[in-house]
Amino acid sequence: MNFEECAAKPLLAEAGIAVPRSRLATTSEEAAAAARALGPVVVKAQVPAGKRGKAGGIRRAQTPEEAESAARGILGMAIGGHAVARVLVEEQVAIERELYAAVLNDAAARQPLVLFSTEGGMDIEEIAAARPERVRRHHVDIRSGLADEAARALVRGLDLGDHEPAVAKFLVSLYSVYRRHDAELLEVNPLALTASGPVALDCKFVMDDSAAPRHAELAARGTPETLSPLEQRGKDLALKFIELDGNVGVLANGAGLTMATMDMVRHWGGRPANFLEIGGESYTRAKPALELVLANPHVKSLVVNFCGAFARCDVMMEGVAAAWQELKPSVPIFFSIDGTGDVEAIAILKKRLGLDPFPTMALACKAAVEAAR
Image (cartoon, rainbow, N blue to C red; front, side, top):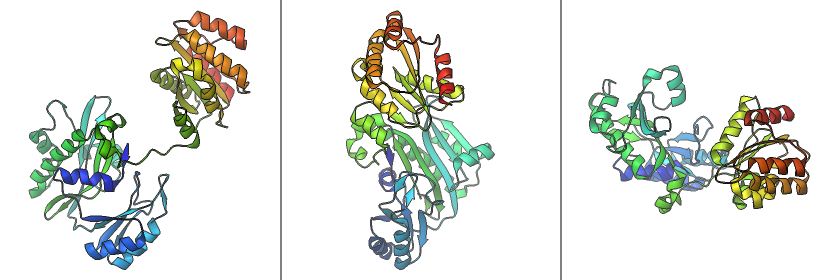
């Protein structure tokens, strides 16, 4: 779950991290009023997307009139697929230096990862690729948290002068916010050094979706996920469906098997059109699932991959065969069947659809990719 800057920064402030004074505005007149109260300001589009500045969604204003004009130009913009409906009017800060700091989930290491760089205000991906030595990294043992000494080591020797202890303390506080709110990502870019110490000029916060029930009040301030019409239809049907930009439809049982099928499609040079995991429900819900996949006009072929484990292959095949016979789609379909009930499932496939499965998932995906070309 993504959060806009105006919803993320209060979490930092609650932890004692300094943030600029600000006011939220939904009209240009409100932006002008905020500037009259705050003085010179920065008017910032509030959308859960990066690169707002490059899109023209962040503008400086010295006067209320300039703030009103800036807000008028930003409100209604489209940034990262999101329409700007409000702006954060934030006091300008006298910046001595810009830094970068973040805590994120490192799936490969299965640990939180703290990142720190003196290259603040820039795309960290570009810095990490071009000058990896400029980005310092530290994995955290969640049982003990980020130790003060580890934070001091991250910032040592970077010419931070008298700010070094305060920056180290900031990293410890940032990690505590990350843990307390079940974040997947907590990023401050830039972290400004000022005469009074570090100030978070921006904040990107992404919360683990599965943690939403534990943080109901906070989750209510998150930005609703933007769904395509087909994804909304899948949600209404309670199907696990994600629309992609390819032309090979995918239907499989189990999330891992579905993702493996998508990877195999890509391996053969194809592009999956969707993620759709249906599992044992295919016996009763195959028709709406197939209708959903085939409603995408870009789908030119379909691969069905069943592995009998928690659900029997023959039970799943019964549902798919019945739905296929009823819908009578024109796209070619390619099956891979293995596991519990596979012998019975193959017999159903031959009898009901007159088809044979491929001996491996790889060959079924290869045939689907070739048919889609």
